[in-house]
Length: 97
Image 1 (tube, one colour):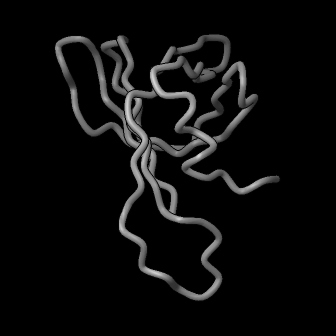
Image 2: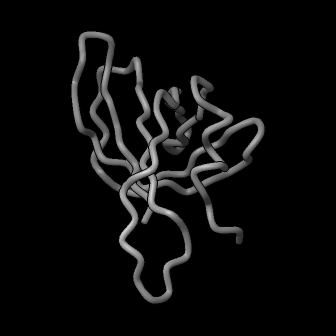
Image 3: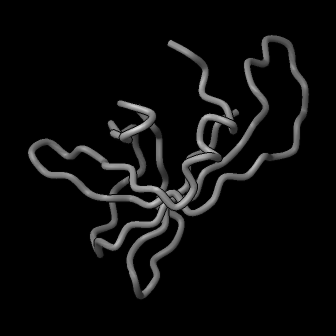
């Protein structure tokens, strides 16, 4: 499996990622991709980055690893954490280090 990089996601800003929940799905929009400060350590596989996804669903999903599907990127497993509730839905963050 290839190591996901910032450059893997940055071309897909404002596109929809479909989170699989058993028989249901929730659409999440990738609204932000940002590089984070680099603290080089032995065995480092990638430059750290974070992603912000927004969901129009009022349901707050617990933090955990979820299967995502994207038309250009295919199936991905991403660990997300809910970080905010907004009038339009819920905001989640994924951090890659």
